Length: 164
Image 1 (cartoon, rainbow, N blue to C red):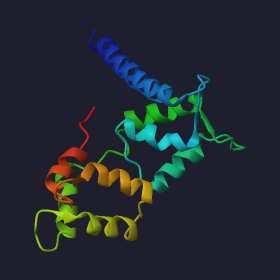
Image 2: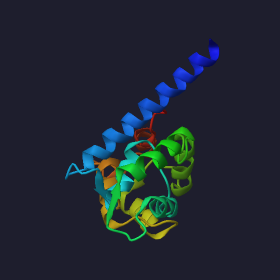
Image 3: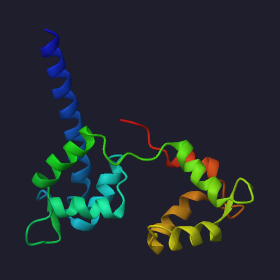
């Protein structure tokens, strides 16, 4: 009896995950033809709670793109890869305390905030640099419009994604 119940729970979990993947994919399937623009894949993956690096994202795309790239990703290739990714809990976001530690390193004076210009400099010049579009999107969510600063303790909690 217990084995049958475990299998039923596993099947239910897989069905739930595949429904979430399908729902996310369909939002970007503008032609309703089971394909999405390759440029939307990172948004879909991140909407499912995964946060791969750009290099990891390129590996994912290499796995699911057609042999002759068309600029589109087919759902039938995306679903099994993404199901496996979510089942294995790959590319999980960093916990809030790790994000806060990173901000503390950037805030060398211990002010509890960063100026938008400081954050922009760090994010566009260090590590895996952000594009201007990514930076604009981040700043629109991170910067306190009254003060022009990033209160990183508040922002770190906004960035944290709840577990599935």
